[in-house]
Amino acid sequence: MTDTVATNTAVLILLGPPGAGKGTQARMLEEKFGLVQLSTGDLLRAAVAAGTPAGLAAKSVMEAGGLVSDEIVLQILQDRMAEPDTAKGVILDGFPRTAGQAEALDGLLAGQGLGVTAAISLKVDDEAMIKRVSGRYTCGGCGEGYHDEFKLPAVAGTCDKCGGTEFKRRADDNAETARARLEAYHAQTAPLIAHYGQLGVLEEVDAMGSIEDIASGLGSIVQKVSA
Ligand code: AMP
Image (tube, rainbow, N blue to C red):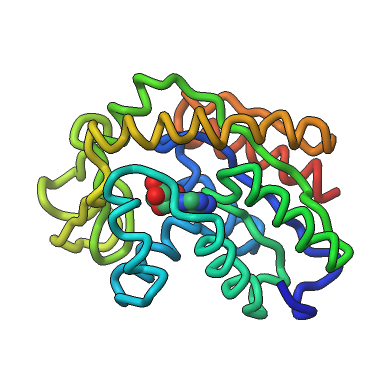
């Protein structure tokens, strides 16, 4: 984090297990409120694809569904936060995931006269999450999300949004890895809910409903905390 971050920067955190809809909801909030989605998962996948030293170190951990070291994650997060577009405010999607990351974030923000505006916990059911994660895929062209069971394209093999015909599945979106990721969430990330409760910035949303209903609940929270 650098002095390019404005003092009125909103810092929103989305907390929730894999499959809770953090990425989908973060993209919707980004469009609606002009905030910047910052996904450490996306940043790590880009580092893996680029073959950087951080990416090489992270690859096998991600494939096993474990957590990448705080050191690597904090470095890529700080590098991204140093880019000027984050001055509009950020939605942290998938970060922090450990007590160490949460403390580091609190310290970095405090150094800028900032704090976490809201940490929004997406409440979901574990077994439903495994099902959601195991069947999901995205359009290779525009990133629109689909699911083998819950959301098929209207015309088989063609993206509803951009007409693309190439689709991608994340290497870690299978039932076995999803279970490991869920375990990592319960062991290391869920305790952060209490941390943000103590800071007085915790908000909770039922994330088992439709994408639109969840988006509307989140939108109300963002409006409330930014007022
Ligand atoms: P995600 O796209 O958020 O589901 O993250 C995919 C994978 O990237 C996770 O299963 C972890 O291996 C790694 N990862 C993403 N964010 C973090 C983080 N904040 N701390 C540690 N590992 C992370």
